[in-house]
Length: 469
Length: 114
Image (cartoon, rainbow over all chains, first blue to last red; front, side, top):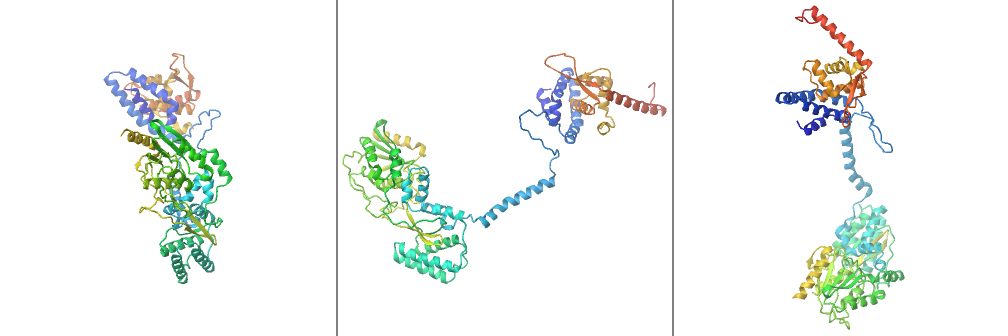
């Protein structure tokens, strides 16, 4: 009989027995197996062992249960736990515990819905947040300390408002308040909406809803904002209109132009080399520009022209926008100007102005007008970086390599109408010369889809292949 | 205490105590002694043997002692009968002797049994 079998037999016994007599048990088996050889004796030994198991196993388990395990020597300095109660909990207790846990778990969603009002208002679902992605991106950018200026330049936006809403709680409404809100909303709409006729139509619709008593059941400002948003959408067929509830005070910003960046921005840009992280010539004369934002030209024009001068004689140009979190359309225009031999219209829904949006091409001295251009994107590429990417793609001026971009286009303004409510409008609707929807919410699909990490290698590979042709 | 676990005294426990009357023995030696004194009828398996040894130790009927240093690598545990154990063996033997006397008077046994 093998040692393994003996060890297996030993494992059948309770741990207290194994600890105390495990070695002895095995030694006795070995001794007997050594002494009792021959077929007859071996069979007898096997029989003995079976009988031994039948007799001793139940007894050992009975004793192990009845006799509290002797506390083995506690190694000094080692924390140990001993269970005082030796018996396991009864079946009834276990069942009771299971039922209580289940009920508690199941009641969480109900309680949270009831008291926490955690459900986002219907107007600010995931998809809608994309509409104001500007805000989301700016929040991310400013947290990295990179684009303070852009953050201040853009209006306060939905995702933040939504956050504060859920935290702030929600005042109750009476009919007088509701009337005041509707009146103020209509006034604001007429003042700010770009199509007066549509504003009139929406106003009439809202009034008729109110007169019919459609709003009587709405008790909270957040719910009311949600309800008004959906009514506005129905009346105007414009999903860019929003009603926002937030406790935070958001100043009514004057319309444009984008204010000049603060001095701190200039200092930060100086420190970051205007976010031109890398400007270099790769092997095979490939110009590589890694740009992490589109900084304001008032601060960074020199840096940008220097960067482009450095790669001016490259045969191929790669713009790495994988970590680019956006910035100023003016810089998009400045850089794009180098890439054309005649002025091109740049579609720029980010810019809050209606000023002309043509490149200043041709740029004197630029050798890049006819060189192949690759743009590297990631799922974080957003805003002004998307504007750059979108226009070069639409103009068939660049090959886009990487991931679908984040999808943030429109700038929005929030106009206060009192009672912590704001009317959100898209101020400017620039002409989109492409019959295609712009990148808002959906992002820009690359021409060559690879993971962001592989994008550079892919671009270099394609550039070299181009050259060899 | 002894009454709870060892009353009546199991046959194996009695045989082990009996085996330890003359000398201190280790586990395997106990097993062989028991087999010998029962004419090979009782061959203790390790589970039964050490289960019984443990109970006897707990009841202080036997005690563990240092055995002779026979080997450096293998150190066997030896067991010795305690005074209480000796008393119990005698009591049990007397009980069996009484039993035997009754059986003899009733002519249950034939032949020249003591």
